Image (cartoon, rainbow, N blue to C red):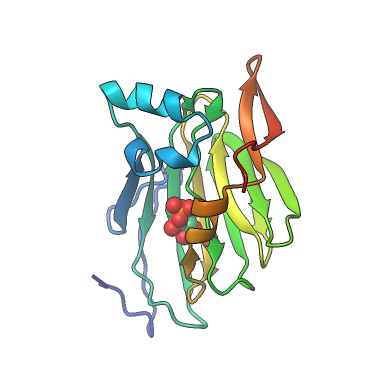
Amino acid sequence: MNQFNWDSSFLVDFDLKTGKSETAESSKRTLSQMKDMYHDVQAAEEILKNEDPVIYEWHELGCPERAGDLAFGTTILYPGKVGSEYFMTKGHFHTILETAEVYYMLDGEGFMVMENPEGDTIEMPLKKGEVVYVPRRYAHRTVNTGDKPLRTFYVFGADAGHDYGTIETKGYHKMIVDEDGKPAVVDNPNWK
Ligand SMILES: O=P(O)(O)OC[C@H]1O[C@H](O)[C@H](O)[C@@H](O)[C@@H]1O
Ligand SMILES: [Fe+2]
């Protein structure tokens, strides 16, 4: 569904408090759809016995995947943990690896966890009012270390594409866990 004319101008609503939009389509990922991304599989199974929580939702405009266009929207990542690991997005490389992205932090606190194919990693702490620049070639995942939703507004080159497979099979080098009530960056023992 594409209700916007990307060859003309248009206006769209985004509520910069809630991150929600009346117009943009919303999609969600629940724990059952991404339980294998978490380190503590047993903790994930325990939660899923009682409920299948929404981990995050995002609003997008169905931008065509054309070079030169800009895709943008918002993501709302809910607070919570699976074992000691904070709720996070699935994360992806861009299929066109040389595509950067910016995220403006509307609310909340957390980390942008990034890594490139060479294994260089960046764990950038984020708080409300900051813009994080995700450079070309870096996979990116948002982690919510706070107790309220982490809300971001994002923009990236629309032809970038999403490569989920690499992260699904290899995982990330680093993970963000709760250590005595504070977020800590640790090596992911499951990294392949
Ligand atoms: O693609 P995920 O890692 O699941 O995150 C979901 C969405 O969140 C972000 O805001 C991105 O900019 C989107 O491109 C992405 O599809
Ligand atoms: Fe991206």
